[in-house]
Image (tube, rainbow, N blue to C red):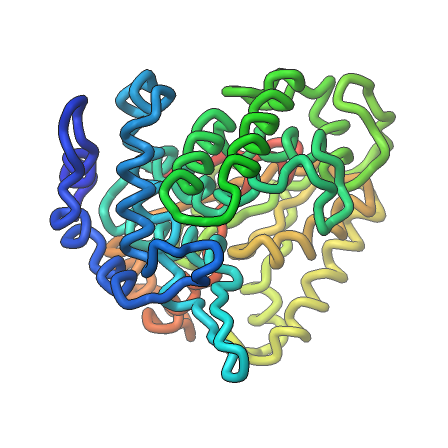
Length: 379
């Protein structure tokens, strides 16, 4: 599978989708044929039947037909893969027989990321597809107060920093039109109201504007603020937070761009403590965190060099930095799988290539709103 091959899956005007070629490109979708769904919301049957109906519905939509070719490629592949992880997340209640697929959106984004990474899909295109998959159901309920207790306005503003809301609404509409369920018009109306709210917020097809980066960071982290009114920023350290799989080139990047800055590193902590990778990680984390606190108390700039691979891992670091009013630049690095494994195999490390590849299941790329600046250094 290669990006040019995947582009050819996207039909030109008047063509029908080649579902046989789609299955060949993404073998995991074969499992969708035997993956059941809740018959209340999916009376059409299995996941593959639903997926085909969604893709066909998408192709008939005027918004899709009027989109650019690049946009069509993104939303078509997102529609094709939006339920790719239902096969691995299906849970059937042994008593009631109720069918659920909890977490299938997040898991689907991870599955898609790995498949598209191996297919040499351009980084920006790949991540737009994966982000769409991750939040593809949000427009159904965006006008309701979320489980997190945030307002619809917050939801729309936040989403605009993750995806193109035009494409998200398009995907959500196709998802509803491509199924047999009770009262689909109610959800289609909710999606249209979601579109209208995004237009009112000035973020339909673009990010919601903020008066400055500090206000944006504080707002998305729960501060009582408004995007148009600046919050006071207390002085603190300027911190560069590295993110990326092992062997992606983080050390080299730091040495090249910031050779004089102090570095907080889990690898250095392991060396100082005499520990191998994966051993006593709590002790390693505590050691690195205390080093960071020392620098933060003095307001000194530094680099925090670690994988920070999942959002949960990054959040722990960012919580500490923002507590001390740090100005944060997140720098993400990436390499193709073959190059990554070659480099890791040549390093003097206790991390095997097998363990490295196991880390892919926690691979969540930093989102643009996580820090004051987010930089993607991807060849």
